[in-house]
Image (cartoon, rainbow, N blue to C red; front, side, top):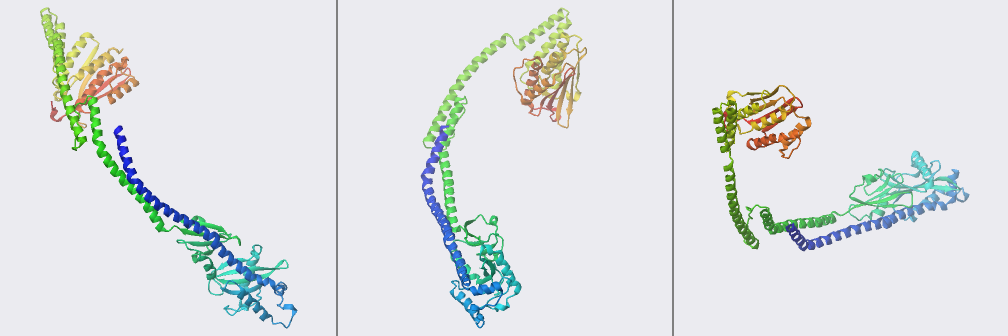
Length: 583
């Protein structure tokens, strides 16, 4: 409809004029927030791939450089290989203890890592060869033998991979440490291992200084997916579960060059940024919603009277000249509505005048036709024929004329829709008398109605069409010798209904014909029916439709039939209290 297009145009105009500026402003906010989130992602990538990676690599390199000094002392390596005492230059008078102490002291002083807690040597069978400095809480010779053997076995396991850095939650120093174990290879065989114990704080500070993003977490895992470092120290030595990482976290990964380790950096988007982003979206959605409400209200307020006026025009076009439009305003649209109402009123007056004139003319014509042959004239003629039959001594003709005259007299009373059951049965007795004369000796008719039900009110002229159908289409075509038609009345107090049963033993109906008839009664469809089996159902449909119009949808006809067995029609009517009906 054109008016709906007007509504859409008004709605679009309002949305464009107010929605575009708000959307631009909110878009700027969203863009700035997105830029901040992108900047954090780029910063996190830089921190991981450059700063954290370099810090970890530098830490490992410093440990390696510290341990590599041991390879310059071939005499010490030889003594480890041969399980002999350390004697530089084969001098038996040399103070080996002091020389060893100076060697370790030099390694400590030259180390770039200042948080070394201890350095010691182990030969290939797990015996100590060296000494701790004064800052080590236990003497070198006091190290537990099982502890040393465990370290040498661990070094053999990782010998192919080189030095191994491991986190120790408990240590000789009563604090967590990182232990750097270097397998010592001399002349093609492992002669022992160098162990450097480092304070955890040193390694932590070397990488945590780059943890600058919101709720950032640094995780380092070994090839077995065991966590060797975590910002939360309680997570160290637990198994890394990548599936368990929250979807709220942003993850940056980097493979480390040594040990087969993997560096992961987890961080979250700052909630302040998300707040402003969500606020921008909420502003857009809220603004659009408010604009749509206001725009729809405005557009409906403008177009609703026009649409109502258009609909009333269509009603007048279809012939409903009582259509009027409601006027709520005094503006131009209200003036248009008032003019339309005045025009519709004038059209209705002109059409009513013309219709009444035509109706009067038609009524005059009908009365003229009725004067030529009317029920009264026919009734009087039948009375005359009856009198002549008496004079001529023809009693059968007299009775037929009287019965037919009574039927027409009953039919002439069209003002009353209801009649007593007694009068209705009298009417059908007149009809049945004539039928017996047409088919002498062929039909047996039984009517049983109790005295208490004879004064019940029923719609007029409902029995005669049904009996006529039963005789013409059920009994007469039947091959039976004895053709029976029964009518009896029952009172159903349970359902408060009066039921009239009309039963014949005629030829009945097939299942298909009965199904079609039942369907038409249920849907109250009127149509032209050509087949003989269906043609008799037209009277049934008319009676059924009339009963439902007068009494209600729960009343009417019910039909039961079997081929060559007969048909039963049940008429269901209301049973008023005290057998009274409102006329």
